[in-house]
Amino acid sequence: MHRRDFVKLSGAAALASSLPIGSIEASAPRRKIKKSLKYSMVDVKMPISDQFKLLRDIGFDGVEMDSPSNLKIDEVLKAKEASGLEIPGVINSVHWKAPLSDADPEVRAQCRKAMETALQDCKAYGGTTVLLVPGVVNQHTSYAQAYQRSQEEVRKLLPLAEETGVKIAFENVWNNFLLSPVEAARYVDELDSEMVGWYFDVGNIVRYGWPEHWIEALGKRILKLDVKEYSRAKQQNEGIWKGFEVELMEGDCNWPEVNKALDKIGYEGWASAEVKGGGRERLSSISKSMDAIFGLS
Image 1 (cartoon, rainbow, N blue to C red):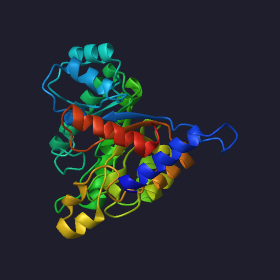
Image 2 (image 1 turned 90 degrees about the vertical axis):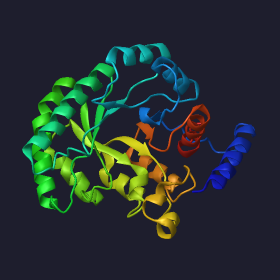
Image 3 (image 1 turned 90 degrees about the horizontal axis):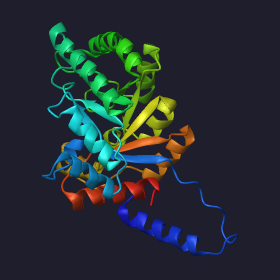
């Protein structure tokens, strides 16, 4: 749905709220979504404590950090406490350059070691998930190899996940792997652990599917959401990657249908923006767009 359609809906909602009680049907309960974003989106030159306060002031409930990283955990925790901002999870920072599906055991070990650090960091931050790209299929790594190797490596991480209480959340990305929602669900189920699930990226699906179909198929396996847009028209006219160069609510994500699917599976929890960041004005605009998308304002 485009931004102009949301404006119409917002106006209708405002009019309805001004009518006398009993003149309209009771409105649906407010969707229980908390707003987050990636720390890498924050392009404001100031101490991390002030950055966190800024994010809280413009309406975000949390921020996700990379791990491993050069940030000092103590400083991050002080910023978290001072601002009231939560850290719902962290993102594995090496899963692209050293995937768990690589043919070289030493490369896989690098990613596994990074995951161990990320799980520990996430626990320290008070978060609940580590985002992981489970594997990458390319001319050197077959689909079957990526499947087998990545599951084998994830199983090695499950004891630490259980110890820390932090779950491993697989993200759907353009990695030529786990390309259907049924397969994605099976991949999780085969690991047979409550410590794994899905970090569902809404915008990443639009190029070759419909997000609402994935949500229905993944169901309770969805642990968190990534929020971005994608334009099929820009993809066709300007190139595949240009599809992402569109503002929230101005692409082809059918957010009303996405919300219906989320409501159907009873999703409550975090939604994290993963778009081009910037300064206060830009981040505030993203926060407001997320309010409109999920009916939070």
